Structure formats: structure tokens, C-alpha cells
Image 1: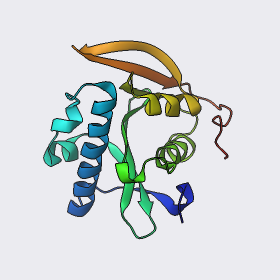
Image 2: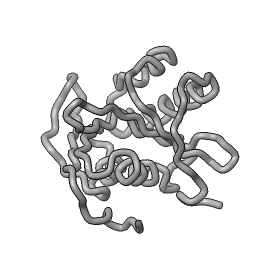
Image 3: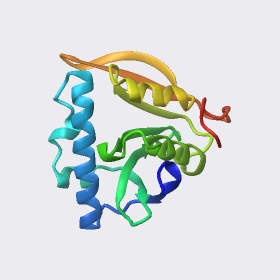
Image 4: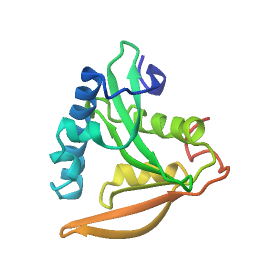
Length: 170
């Protein structure tokens, strides 16, 4: 089976060595693709070691194939005011264009933090990610440059109910 129905979304436990190793590998591969798209290879996650990734104060969910392998993941943190910040949304390049990122984002918005404001950033020249967030009801905020040669786009999805994402069935 292909497409998003071939996957289920589950919490990920990064204290499990195999899970953490898979998430680290997928993150590095996905960020390597983004680095090429945006023309900037200084993305912090590319230099992050396994221990650093595990130490990050994040919660993790993954899109898992029927046989148990991880196709992609979403990691986030929640602020005291209830705003959720998506820290990373990564898909294994072998699973690109199969609906994995949309599946993870839909699950997060409807099951993990429904009705809450959500913020995320991505490389401004990462056209697939920019389109993904726009499709899921995120509004583009100001672009900013945290490092020379790097332009980031900010997005926010307001809290409360929004219509279904464009082109995505519920």
C-alpha cells in the first residue's frame, strides 16, 4: 500500500536506541535536502549529534510504516501560554511525495494540539515546506535572517477552528 494510509502516527520514544538512531538518520537526510534547496549548509540539525538530539526538550511523533520503520517525524515544544512550536518536521527522502508530512501535520493539529496556536519556521526557499504550511492553514509572517546567507520564513496557525486544509480530505 502506498500513500498516507500506509502509515500510522505514533509517539516516538527517543530513549529507545533504535528509534533515536532512525530519527537522527532521517533528520540528517531530510535537512541535507533542505540545505540544497535553500543554498545553506549550516542548518544546526545537520551538525547535531545523537546525544544532542535526544537531550532536546521536545515531544516526538512519527509516521510509521506497517512493518514498523519510521518514514518521518514531527517534534514540538509547548510554551506556558499554550502556543506550540514545531521544532522539526522531517521525512525520509525515500518517502518524499507520499503524504507523510501532511499526515503528521494533520494528526498533530487535530489530535495532539487541536485548536491551539502553532508556530513553525522553515527556509524561505524551501518551496515544498512553504507550500505545506500554507495548505494547512498557516499564515506566513515576516522572513528573518538568523545567520548570514540564511533567510527563514515564519508561519503561525492561529488557535481555534479553521477550515480543512486546501486540497486535503479530512
